Length: 399
Image (cartoon, rainbow, N blue to C red; front, side, top):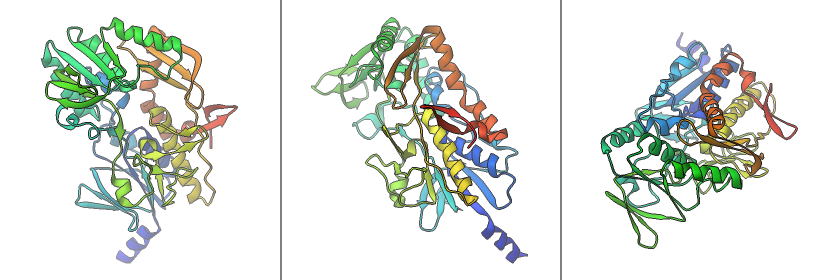
């Protein structure tokens, strides 16, 4: 009996997906849907929380707004995929094992590495000790509690990228009695074409957000931030959104990584040093014709889908196809009833087309709400999540 069980285990191809962010969830659901009826393949998804984190809504949670409770185990129910709750603490690419919470070991034959990025709190002194971040629901809830108790005061948002813009706008709209200061090296909307950029900046001004462009924070203190040049900006609360970093586990495991610690992949999203490891989302340095992709939900989900399809093709003895992706838009919320949407070329450069106002806000909400029902559709119809380049556009279709 034991020999038969061991032989069965040896014949089962174990696929382990690390991280249930936008990319990791896409990979896990696609794999589960495509191999769920196969007795020779087992899919396991590892994540520290059972609740799916809607990163696109964290700025809402940070201002005390309620968002949906989305259960990862419930989504996977009926697919045959297994969910393991725990923190990944080590990866051994030689033994093909992953350590969970330092006391459990999972083995794999194929690994999908989707441990995404978090706010870089190490680059600037004082950020780790004195600033809030939006790395997950718990961080957002802690900040929401602080803002609710603040009454009057100054909130400094460090970083003028999309997360910083959306957070500053949300806080200013929700708490008009607070003084909100947005600090960043670049002006908000710097990558947009002139008109949508001007709209975005005017919207921040209407909300009372003070924008300080060309500002570099050199230190965060308990009651202020210091800028290059010696200026000090008073702050009762500091929210840090400037820069991201990835888990050091990939580099520690001996996988080839880039200067930011992301796994360098080949054209099919496999690690260039370890072909049995696929990297997706923020964890991967994926080169396209226009350069290396930057981390977004927009690009992350297709990487997860493509990795899953590539794995299934390999299991079936077929050659994986190269990954191709082009950006389509940059939607930015400016509170609950306003937004700006910059449509882009595939290389993420701005097109002339854009949306503003309530129409843009509805568009942004549609984008924000789309991942979870998309996973549900992929669970039943996996081909609905596959992306094909067609005529210069990137559309969904069967692979």
